[in-house]
Length: 226
Image (cartoon, rainbow, N blue to C red; front, top):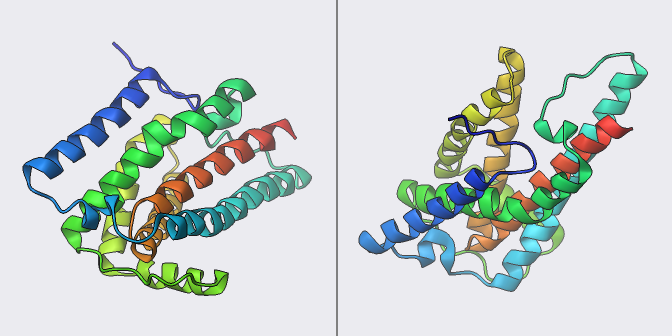
């Protein structure tokens, strides 16, 4: 039996996401994990949501502009772009269904709980964040400082390695393209790890992760439709 997963999502992907979340929570109970330091508590949820939307949203918009701008520049130069993600060829209806709803279940929540929750706690127990409400500039400084802690960098490498199978499943064979994708994914891991430590819980990286993937998928599809 072959399981096909597309940009529109799959029952298998949703089931795997739910199973991963349940397994991590059960493991936390069995090993008497402090769920606050794992990211399921701590900080203030209002501040975390603000960080996720502002910082994650800015990064997502920048990524979307790069995708669309790169596609327009390539077209102007007469360069034919290969389809670098299944999202580029997905119909708008299924694509938006996945981007708006399913990404929470099969990507954002399980991956953040795994990499910025359980793994980050294993590598280095996060310290308490600054409880003040920082300005936009101060928020970026907090996220950048937190993002370059050794534990965040290590978890980001693991995050990129986790996506190697997905990148290969997309049909990529060029080593440079594969390495470039993994580097972008690792960079996302640094951002999400910084959001996790700066906010004190997982809401900020979950929201930032969702926004980043949503905008990237929509931008890739729009680039084809231009």
